[in-house]
Length: 321
Ligand SMILES: NC(=O)c1ccc[n+]([C@@H]2O[C@H](COP(=O)([O-])OP(=O)(O)OC[C@H]3O[C@@H](n4cnc5c(N)ncnc54)[C@H](OP(=O)(O)O)[C@@H]3O)[C@@H](O)[C@H]2O)c1
Image (cartoon, rainbow, N blue to C red; front, side):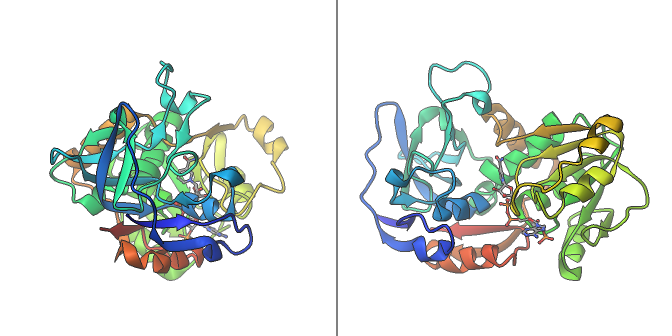
């Protein structure tokens, strides 16, 4: 079948590992279902996979794509939850020590067909297009978890999103605005800051800018480039919710500020099946739709990877089939 995959790990030149071609048809194990993929979205995770981060070398070649939407054999339209857990685990899937994300152990969604455990498909709301639904499983789910579960914020409070145009950043801005938070964001260019404002940010700032006042929570996916600023932006008792470190580990943990101002740092990874169902419902109820900056046929996936690697995002990058 047609697939977009990583041939081998290439830590310094991820695009050199990218292949657009053919892979064997998948055979669903007992209890798994084949999903004919109609749309799948690109995540930074796919670039980590090309670099060989978070995946063992013997797992290559690996079909990329952590999330998607498609159709079951009986015609049911579905959204994928890509956290594959141990069937014996009873708690939240994100805390299952044996959990794995599509593309880490099992083949991903940038293909004609993906196979997943039956419990990992949810009905696609009719109101969402396949492309919109394909944004929800990773970036939007993580943003939903960060905002509504991990942050402890109440509507009316002020949050800062580090980043304006990325998948998680745009989701945080759109979800935060719809839920009644005062949303501030940093963006690396005027164009990116304008996009954040179009999506609902009340105010935007250049990276590292002094804010008019300290915020209740900061949402981090950038890491080293923004960490110190994030810590300095918080009011006493404030919270940083972090789900990524695109620019690497922080060089200074800012320990003195952390204890003296009694700050909280909370990690977040993906979300549960239940949270994904709630996110889909939230989108239906509010009319919010994931911001898609670029939609390409899957055959042209390389252009999407190049754009993400260059930081040229304007929301999610979606591949359709
Ligand atoms: N833990 C999880 O479950 C989970 C889930 C999803 C994503 N993540 C992680 O979150 C991070 C973002 O993922 P994504 O898919 O949203 O990526 P993306 O679409 O490429 O977005 C990158 C974001 O980083 C911001 N950024 C700010 N300074 C940057 C710098 N110096 N270099 C690069 N980016 C910078 C960008 O801001 P501008 O708008 O100003 O360019 C943009 O908003 C990745 O590290 C990813 O692995 C983790």
